[in-house]
Image (cartoon, rainbow, N blue to C red; front, top):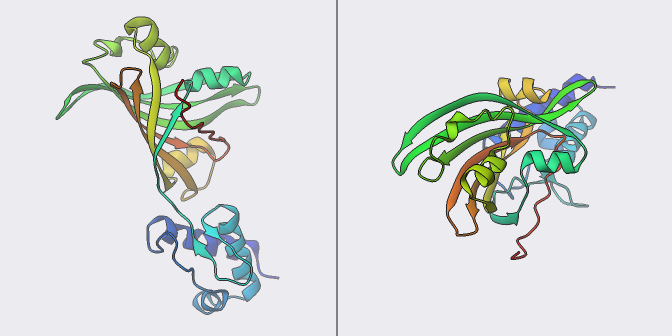
Length: 231
C-alpha cells in the first residue's frame, strides 16, 4: 500500500498548480494514467490524491468523465450583513480581534485608515482565528477614526455610534488563494493550503463607499451570503 505521505504530496503539488493558474477554470484535468506516468506511482495513489482535490472543491468529478478544474471567481455578490463581532455573538461565541497594523495611508482618491486584523473566537482551549482582514476606511467620512482601539471595539459599531454611518450592503469578488507562512500559522493549516479570499466594497444606505476590505477565511468558517432582499 502506498504511503499516505506520497499521495498527499502529489495532491499538494497539483493544488499549487491549480491555484497558480497552470490549470484554468473549467479545464479538463490530466487523467489518472497521465498522472501515474508523471509521478511514477500507482493508479491507486493518484486516485487518492485526486479525491483530496475533489473533496476540497478544486476539481469536479462526473461519472465516466474526466475531472475538471472548478476554481471560479464570483463577482458582484450582494448581501445585507452583520459585523463579524455581531455574527459571533449571535452564535453565542466570544469574538476576539488582534490588531496587526493600524495606520493612515494616502491613495489617489484620498486618505484612508488602514486596519489589519486577525479575527476569531475565544474558547476554553484558546483563541481560534477565523479571518484575516485588511481594511481601508476613508477619512473623509471617518475623521480621526484611528484613535479607537479596534482590538476592543467593533469597527461597524464605531461607524454607527460615533459617525452616524450605517454599513448596509456589500459587493464582493471571491478568489481561491494559498496560505502563506503567516496564514498557515494563524489558521493552523499547512503552508499552501487552499483558502477563500473575498475582496469587498461596503456601502451605506446612501450608496457611499464606507469600507474596502480584503478577507481571507479559515477553512472552519462557514460563509453564508444572503442575497440582498432590498430591506
